Image (cartoon, rainbow over all chains, first blue to last red):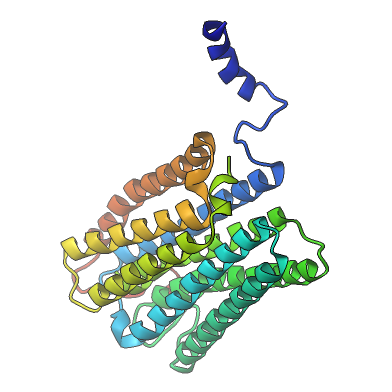
Length: 204
Length: 110
């Protein structure tokens, strides 16, 4: 009996009618979105890598950016991820009030990050950086900067909007714990992408 | 399934937050020094540690079924590897084929 059930058990998982990944379809769709969106950033960072390797010179980032400021932005985003994870945990326990408080803290973190990014962009534009030219002699430096951080910033802004909707719906008890979790998955993905941008663009 | 770790309080998230913070600070300090190949590898390792902690704990991936972990991680890691091995040699070839005087305006800068 047990011998016979071994391979059919594996087979039946993939035969249809059940989720082979043991998650709901909504969560699976969010993961698929995250994978495809991850590939978008992989492409952008790969393009940046190519330009960087092919350029004889690359501006010294320490002369252009304040690394402490970028580290502060990273700190804000990591902290917002922790508050989001706490919100998801609270929602799972049915503590919607706590979940909403932590979602609001996460939104605050997102807005703080966006403000820092707006300041950084304004500063660079003020120094003469544009999409195709800049004062540091490597035009593709500012192209890579604006495109990569711009795409990421747009994701953060989208995340803030999603979280605002989740918070508003949670206040009316119109959101399921899984709804909070899915918004959380997206938010952590935004944080995850920044880990790569921070290291590959600002540090190395 | 995915529900297991979520009912045990939030302590783990703040422990992970602390580790992420320490790794980030360490990386920021390393980033201010003159980077050698070894230090670049250290930074890349730090980056992967942070990415693993975020996906593993914040996104709960390590508590999901192995099939989902493999579907997410293997696809992205293989893509990253393929992109690196395709692009790195090509980028270096472009660099080496350039004149020593070094025209800085590559591609879109014209």
